[in-house]
Length: 386
Figure 1 (cartoon, rainbow, N blue to C red):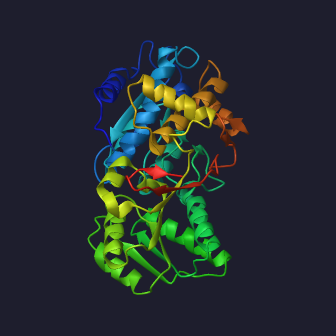
Figure 2 (cartoon, one colour; figure 1 turned 90 degrees about the vertical axis):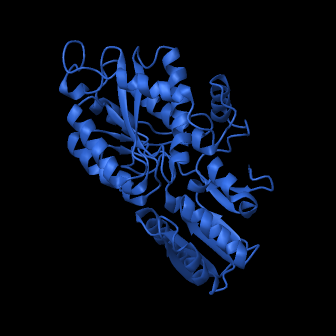
């Protein structure tokens, strides 16, 4: 993962300096919070540092590339999009502080790309109470996809979709003894529940499950417990350091055991850290392969990234790019008199929207607009291959 570029930093600094005032030509009406004659201000609390900082940086990079190109062409109905990204370092308390400040300041039109399962679970009730839409959060958690959850719009397939795809694959190729390592937080427990349910649909049960702490302090002992069951395959409901430490520990005990991870593993920094230990690990993905231009959205993304000086195409930055494009389409549909209610209505009305070879359908409560899940594998050079 490349470090944050001056371009990204300058974008955030510009965003902070562009916040609308509470008087004069600033906020128009209460329902138009965050909208001026010239700007639309989006708020984001995300992990730009800490254990998952490389993921948050990469997703934000793709979104920033899209919004920069959009603004260069005049923005949305004559308004430029200002994305104010706050680094919560995947810390729920910091997330809550940022969201409370955004609600109090009344300068944010909508939340966009908020990062993390426990973080989004904490911020969504606050946002709902304030009438603040939550658009394209970066989490696949079933808990933020409840059918009755209003004002929340997910694009990416859920962790349940990813877990089901992994279980479908391992059972199709004949594996029966499947173990599950899961992170000892909300994210990991939801992946465990989804994977277990998918196994039960196929009349199977995991031969072993083991929790792994967020700091990976028990990664070796958890691996010992899993390997004692002599599994045929291991599903990793883990993110960040725990994933890396468990994979390395497994390879020391059982080199060649097939391991399956979710999309959150697939950052450049994680793959580099894994090195040879990552070779052969299968990873589910919720957006198309970013290095193959077979779909219009991928070709568009590649052109925009290249124009912005980036050659490090990734699933994560493509996801950020797609999120930004889908939100922009909804804001266009909401019309020149942009309001939060208008945005919510526009998103609810986006059915069968072709974003460029991937069809999205919102308006199903908070359910995912996309069910796309593909499998990739870590190749011999530490790169992802299909």
